[in-house]
Figure 1 (tube, rainbow, N blue to C red):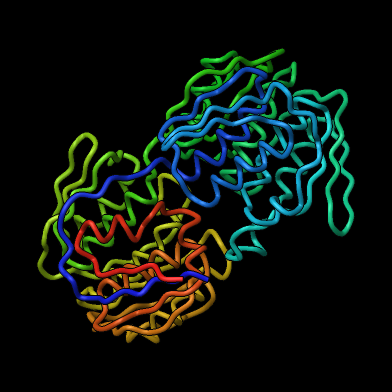
Figure 2: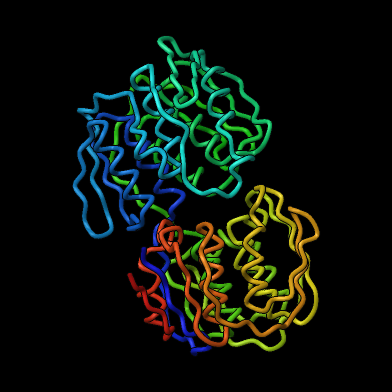
Length: 419
């Protein structure tokens, strides 16, 4: 199994380009099933989860032509309603295929989706199943599989008990082919949802309110397809900004949308991090003393749960004590034990809160990446640490960050990917 070996303390400097948003790529690929026409997806990140999603398209009968940063998908000959267990179990976003297949064929069968272990208890697919039932579908399940059947789906007025990004996107896509009016309430408001809706509207859908808590969909008989350009990954943007702040580096983050990380930039300004913002770049500069600052993760436009881990690493270098409260997922703070092994002064108050006292010198250790976001946080910690750090299970990191070792090497990082 490959791992990263990182010799910390090297000066980082230069430019790094943000890739296409992972969380949008994993939704537009299954959205291709809604149309029988070809779709060309541009600015596609070359990461493991995207590869698995494209494999799943092929397995159910679709065809793909892939280039360096784009893919053309032809779903006109899709002929299967059962999603492969060997693929579905490898990435959680595979559940996004269920709605489009159900809307197009009237039935779908799939095993429980896999992927990250974080939040496994608090990330059930109840919203999907309840939403499909609200559309008039019948849901059958056993120990291994779900079978959803809906010969005559109808519109619904559905309220999400808890804000769910994937739930919002799934039911919004499904409703596009249901010939009736659907109202979704208490929806997530992420920019990926708004831009997905814009694409669908351009090709025959009638969606209003995307990007707000209430979305209304008037179903269409069919949708066309065309070109879709994935927006820059805001989590990658934030990760690089936090990396620069933690290592006190001068790094220009290119091809990003600063507006999508406004909450992070507001906090960085408060705590003394120097940076300059342009239309599509963030220029991180050297800073003086970093102040501590408490955060609580929250749905967009609040502080993203996916940036909580690298933010904690930054707080190990702040002058004082800060509190981080995780409000979205269970078990997402357990990784901080590894940061403590590196020398961080962290106290876990309860499963959802930790305090971090700094500044502390971090030291290289042998570690194992527990999940995607904690994995990139460990990389940032290793770049800051004194000595060598080995990070195993980097498959978890490469699920979301394309060729991260090569991109960091270009900034001057001493990082090697070894088998």
